[in-house]
Image (spheres, one colour):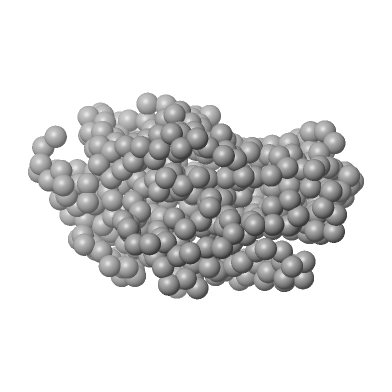
Length: 476
């Protein structure tokens, strides 16, 4: 590939977080390949960067602007900031933070510019306010532009399949998994008494903190040496009250659970991870699945909840995730079938209504069957009030723990399997491999002919994400 190529990477901001790391990795990879790279954002970077950044106000979130610009003006602003480039790589164009961005992307493509569109998150996936904003702005018709010279990149095969099922040509989309880049730290890890099951997460709702407390309650008699801890508190107004309720419950039941240990530890994050007996995850939704791979890069064991839609890509790479469970079933009678149906019906109706979609009895039946196909229910499908009932029951009755399936989360893995996982993650998700995948994608777009531009039918994409079988009360 010629070294005189140039690229513009476009995103709303460069704050701390996953997309910023992805952009940093991409910029480094392109520079190493001899490309000129400019990153275009809507505000000054909030983290240190070592690449060329151009700031255009029109790309800020709509909520931060008095009068957001239209698609044509945003397209011009992006083009002027980029200068002459061979390719635009636009992140989260369809998320709904700037309603003009989908139309701007389509406009750039209509002018013959080659695009890579990378949705990390979807307005259709639990973000109804974003979707309504796009709808009110008339942006849905341009939400997913399609042409031979527009290619999509998704973090996982699940999202790729959703867009293909919605009508996107499979040759115009590929998975582009993130690189795993943990800082090296060979310092001695902090001493931990007992067996620490560490959940390295910010405790937002979808991280399913109730499940960590369930295991804390289940451990008290059978596994008194076990301790459970989460690393970071949430920061959003929605999540903080729920988190504080969990902390109060843990204290009132005297559970072996700790919180915010990442903020209260003098050791580095990597050293803290290495100090645990095992790392855990109980999340009910992830984008890429960093929580699955980071422990393995450290040679650590990972226990807890699997997300088969996310982990399928890792398993295809021969990574062993047999220590995880796909469901954590508890007797349905502990929450009552009638109560569960009532909670699902109420929240599913509200969720579909928020997207302007009807909720029929068949939708409720499908969501209920996914949660409770028989006389048990998956604990992760419950909301906080129903989860609390289960935790209080376990705390009051040690014998009840035997009715959990699985009845304990700690699974031994042969050291050779841990070592193999560590090797596979290091080989297949490193920065060099990420750069090679990225360059291959870019070359494919550069080789494609320029064609007329159309767009996917937005309802077909929405239907993929609103399938009632995917419904979780914790995501409402």
